[in-house]
Length: 181
Image 1 (cartoon, one colour):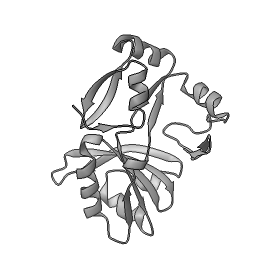
Image 2 (cartoon, rainbow, N blue to C red):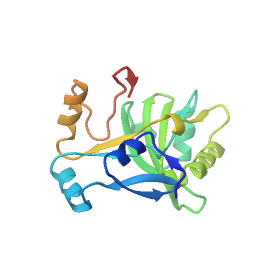
Image 3 (cartoon, rainbow, N blue to C red):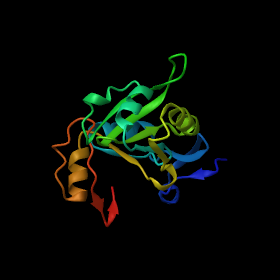
């Protein structure tokens, strides 16, 4: 049995999710059935619990230049409020992981696969100078993905904000019910 649970595990169980272990976490894999849920997400919108992912803040003077050397991303073309899927590579050029979010000039968040989080943190920390602060915020960060053609409509209705200006792989910091998002 998996020892780790996301903040949403009890909700999933109470709502009849079929749960299964993944990288040490107990995760929901389906409710009504894979095909029904896939079709609903492709035609409407679906919400996915990804609280098990690893999240690292990388910030401070020189973070932009140092992180650019540590990952395959071209961070010079990554504007604040955007994120990009790219790669953290091992010494032989094999892919480890990585989505990088840019908050500002020297402020980033890396989101990595749960199964690789500890190793990815160690690899990044070793590649960054000590002057660049790196903080593992995984334990205090909840993350969900909203996917499907009606996602923006669902998000705007729930939060009462316009998100059509974000564009592909865009994000914005905001609040909901007093909590930061």
